[in-house]
Image (cartoon, rainbow, N blue to C red):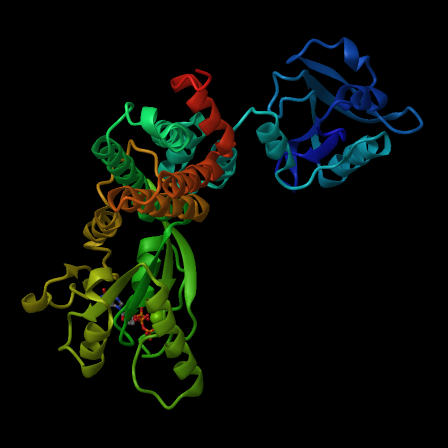
Length: 447
Ligand SMILES: Nc1nc2c(ncn2[C@@H]2O[C@H](COP(=O)(O)OP(=O)(O)OP(=O)(O)O)[C@@H](O)[C@H]2O)c(=O)[nH]1
Ligand SMILES: [Mg+2]
C-alpha cells in the first residue's frame, strides 16, 4: 500500500478568492499539524477549523480553513486534509512548499483518484468519470459523466460479467466433470444466453458515436466557394466578430476553429478558405487545408449563394462532400429565395434569419447518427471502453461458433475467460477470481 503522503493544489491555477490544497496519506494529519497553528490531531473529521499556516520560524504565512477527513470516509479512502488558503499563485505555492518541507511529496496527476481506485472507493470506470465530469463542456456530457460516476456504466458491465460468468461456470464444469456438467444447461440454452449477452454489449458499444460527440464535441466545418458567406455565418453562429469578412473573394486563408454551444451540446466550428482554382500560393495552401478540414469534419455545412447561379466550383463541391455528412445551406436569401431544385436550409448570415432552423438541423444530425439513442442511457465515451467491448464481443462470437461447431469445452472456456477479462478491464475487476467464486457458489465441486 501507499506509504507516501501526497499533496497538491486541487483548485485551478491562477488567482482566485481561495485555493484548496489537498493532502492524502497515512501521515496527512501529522504533516498538517507540523505547519498549522492548532493541534490538528484533535480535530473532528469533516469539520473546518480556522488557523494559521506557519513559516519555518513559526510566524504566520497565511490564515486558512483546515479540514480533516479521516479515512476511510474520504475521497481517497486515506486520511485527507484540505486547506483553503488565499488564492494567490505565490501564497498557494508557499503553503504547498511548507507541506513538502515537513514530509509530503508532490502528487502526480490523477494520483488522488488512483488511490481512491486502489482503496476501492471507485472502480476504474467511475474514476474515469471523475475526469469526464471535470472536462464536460455541455449539459449532456455532464449528465453522462454523473451517471457514469454513480456507477451506471459499471453496473452494466457487471451485469454482462454476471451473465458470462454464469455461462463460464457451466463450461468449467463441463471441462472438469464432463458427464455431470451437462445437467446444468443445454448447448442451445448456452448459445442463446451468449447471443443475448453479446447483443446487449453491442448496444452499449453503439453508444460510442454519441458518447464521443458528447464528450469531445463533433467538428462542424463550413465549406463552399469563395464569397458565399462562410465567415459571415461563422460569426453569426458564434454571435461575435471572429472571422474577417470582406466582399473580396478569397478573404479567409487559414482554418479558424471556435467552440460552439448549441443547447445541451457543444461543437468545434471550423471556417475554411473558399474553394476555387487559383494561382496564388498562399490561397492554394488555404484550399488544401479546406479539403483536409472537410475530410476530418463530422459534419460539413456546404454553403451556396442564393443570389447567383450555381458555379462550376459549387457543383464540384456538391460532388465532393459526402452526402451522409453534409447539410446544404443557401445563404444570402435576403437577396433572393433559394433554388428549389436541390433542397437545403435557407439562411441569411447578414440578416441572421434561418439560424434557428440551421441549429436544429445540426442538433438532429448528431442524434440521428447514433443508434437508438436514449438520452437517459449511459453512453460510452472512452476509446478504451469501446475497444474492450469490441474485444469482448469478438470473444463471445468465438465462443458461440466454438460451441456450435463442437470445439472442446476447454478452448471455448478460454475464449469466454478472455471476454470476461476484457470486460474486467473497463471497471478493473479481477476476472479469474470472479469465475472461481461463481463456480464455487453455483456448483458444489467438492462433492
Ligand atoms: N446580402 C448578403 N450578403 C452576405 C451574406 N452573407 C455574407 N454576405 C456578404 O458576402 C461577402 C462575403 O462574405 P464572407 O463571409 O467573407 O464570405 P466567405 O465565404 O467567408 O468568403 P471567403 O473567405 O473569401 O471564402 C461579404 O461582403 C458579406 O458581407 C448574406 O446573408 N446576405
Ligand atoms: Mg471567409
